[in-house]
Length: 175
Image 1 (cartoon, rainbow, N blue to C red):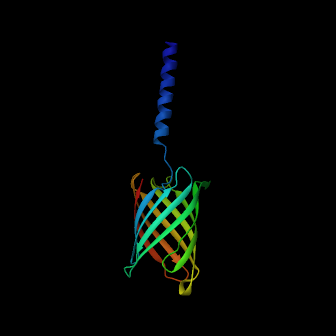
Image 2 (tube, rainbow, N blue to C red; image 1 turned 45 degrees about the vertical axis):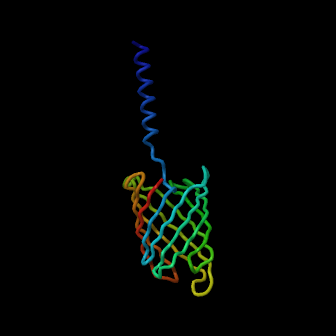
């Protein structure tokens, strides 16, 4: 009887530990495809980690209000859990149609303690270009809700010193 209770207790503990690790959250998803609408512009972008590293590659295509197609790309490094569950991404890449290059920093955190599936992100981007669009600073904030592990929706605001504030609505497929 003594051994039966011990074996039963160990089996129960092992099953509970196994169930707990299976239900643990996987963290923020960076492997995703996003469809966005910002003002008159439609954007399709895809981001993924390269291999098992923290190097994040992003490729985007924008159809702007004039019907022009513009592609962009970036490579970044994700510093996971730098403080209080915040992930920091530092990236460099191409700018938009008027700018040659961009450097950005993005901070992202899950807000599961407030509402399960809620995320917040804030960012800063500096784009270097020529002419009227030279050297554009922009700040952004986004609130995202993960409907499930695969789909999420987001609303963001971008404020640029030289341009008006823009709003973005996004739908994401996480893979």
